Length: 154
Image 1 (cartoon, one colour):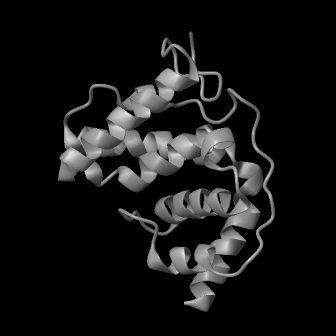
Image 2 (image 1 turned 45 degrees about the horizontal axis):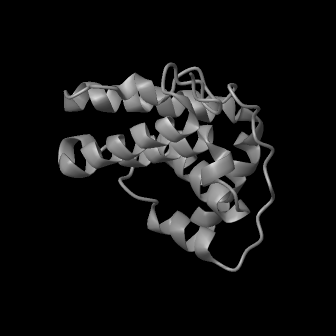
């Protein structure tokens, strides 16, 4: 059975897809060279599984602005402090429409399965992140506006 959210093949549904994600995060935390991709993998996974990881507008804003920052400004290991202050501040965020299931990027978590070479892992993580970000293209204008607002407030 494929994941009903991201379409990852043969993962035995959403619960098993989440287990793959937990293993992937564990691998990143145990290897500093793989951890370079951590922000990308977390945001990509969350954008493809928003029903679980982007329930609040605050978490949705954090993942959208995080992936936008990583792809368009510069990769970071964690949510950049500028964005963290912005998202954690006393703001109300607009709810962004979620792309339909199975239309959240053509690349999913299985793209990183069994990769151990850190350089290849980072390349594949970037490909996955770009795929997920592209699926949310309807949110780019709003997300970029939030990033700009966060930068101006810094």
